[in-house]
Picture 1: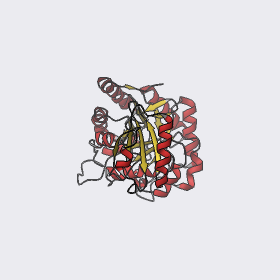
Picture 2: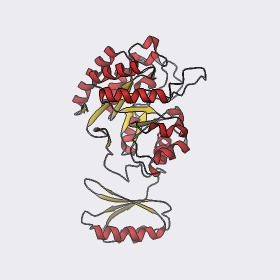
Picture 3: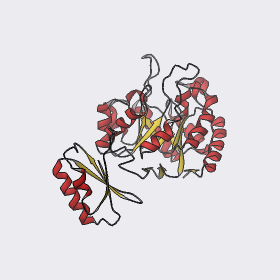
Picture 4: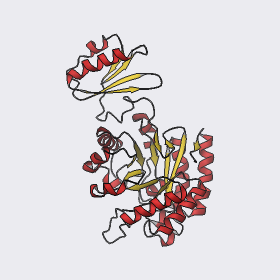
Length: 339
């Protein structure tokens, strides 16, 4: 249930209303937007009579919400959520670009890559220290050592770090990481989501290979319901019958998520297509569709990359793509959030 308050509602009236509502064993969440004040109710609202609520002096409108996700729902939070990561604002009128290799391979490699992507205009650094791989014989990442190399790359360049967490057992190792990435395979690892929800770190939540948008939003709800409101939704391609690309980028997910949720939306064209030739057009399409950030894989020597070299741009090609992304963003009335 959503209660839209009149603009004239006073703090004492709102406090009186919330005390009355809490008698029905529901959780109240007050959201103050630019143009309205809203009280969102989570719980069993069937005992609450809509006419009794509507009769309250400070109430403008009462609506029942059918969607199972509440805190991620735009109806509960009409204004866009803006998430700050080391001074970068994700979800505002700016565009952020997260770039770096699929895997951290060495201290030298990640630092040199960080320098290159920052020079090209990237605003954050990505790199996998722990890697979920289909084959148990493939490179699984450097683990704790890789996280240390990422921190050194941040010290060298100032770029905030985005890296994937795969296990609850590793959570204490991510204390110095700026953004926790939850990969597609872990989108419905609910125990992991609950624990991440108890942290205050921004989370980049990737859509599962075969999951619906509602399921993605429900996974975000797991994080948010445990206290962490700093969630970014990432479209990274879904599995379809089309074999020409690694996955199929669901570009319609961007405006749909924007309509349904107030959370920032990120697009990963690298994993979505698995082809370097498609990264540029899909990045531009993502910007036009309203994405708040892009996540692009870059490797200085893709042919010898330890993982996913086929979808990694070289530093020069990334620089060329970034120029077009910047032009496209400017055309859409936005700019890249370069610090």
